[in-house]
Image (cartoon, rainbow, N blue to C red; front, side, top):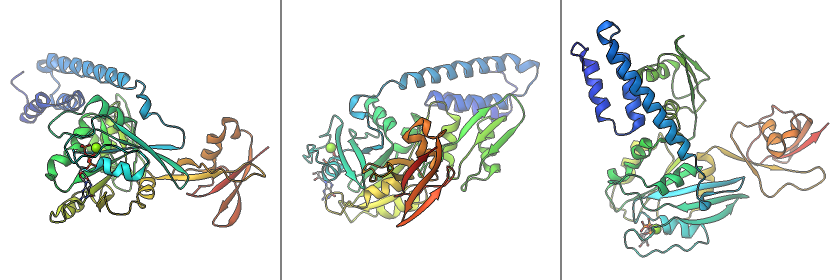
Length: 375
Ligand SMILES: Nc1nc2c(ncn2[C@@H]2O[C@H](COP(=O)(O)OP(=O)(O)OP(=O)(O)O)[C@@H](O)[C@H]2O)c(=O)[nH]1
Ligand SMILES: [Mg+2]
């Protein structure tokens, strides 16, 4: 180390050394580089840091490519099917929940670590197929296994069960743990995208109801990103930004399910005060309480809407296509067939008993029936 560095750069270098993942190290190095004054005496150091940054970027990219390998068969899903991971520490009630939601009968013994391999069950609600996977238990003191990572990475949404009979904070450490592996939680999702440039400053395109452009720019600058364009959406929150600056990471919607086995504990208040503003939180007994709220809660958390397409003269399809809230007739047409866009004339749309004649830009809503008329 050169000796004449400003104290904040020295402190930042400590953070580089303490980084726990290549991604964290990359961010810390970028910030460190931005703190090293530019003059002849620091030239070599700057070069070295730059080389380290380049090497880490290559490593992260290689890891990302490798992680793009095909998921195992039990994680594959059909179109318009949602893959939902049930995750949580041992005995949190994952198998109990899976057994009640689907026809699958996982082993439930009351002994820890009963489920060692992923258990899968499918059920259909409101026309939508939900494929639930019980992921083998989260162990706070261990790294995530590749199987757990495969399941979480492939899932459209994660339900994390919190056990009211177990210590709370180690259970909640799964959020940070997942972040280390590039899985961020944001509900509803508001993915952001970053394009870095060599100069020109920062520009925010789009707007978020949670973060002002100033806050977004300060966040990026904190990570040493001073030039580029960041595209944000209505729901973009900090985890979406974190994911945008880390190549290969993903953002997933999350539901926290506090399994009330024991009513003496006041976890409910702690969880609500900590997380209610960020994630949907439900406190229920997964063994005894009704679960009929869950499919709707899942659709809401991921902002999925169901659109029923209809052939001319036929009846509406029983299997809806799933789109994101805010989608238009254009998205519906494109999902039916690629050529439908160029051949599109108008669409007939049934909503709440009324029929509308609409164009490509018309916003569809959950439950709409759509018939596309071609030229
Ligand atoms: N009283 C009560 N017991 C529950 C509830 N949910 C689960 N249990 C019990 O807790 C124990 C563990 O439940 P499981 O569903 O097997 O938990 P798991 O998360 O699948 O656990 P592992 O697969 O072993 O990691 C079983 O004895 C369940 O009967 C609940 O809501 N109320
Ligand atoms: Mg189990």
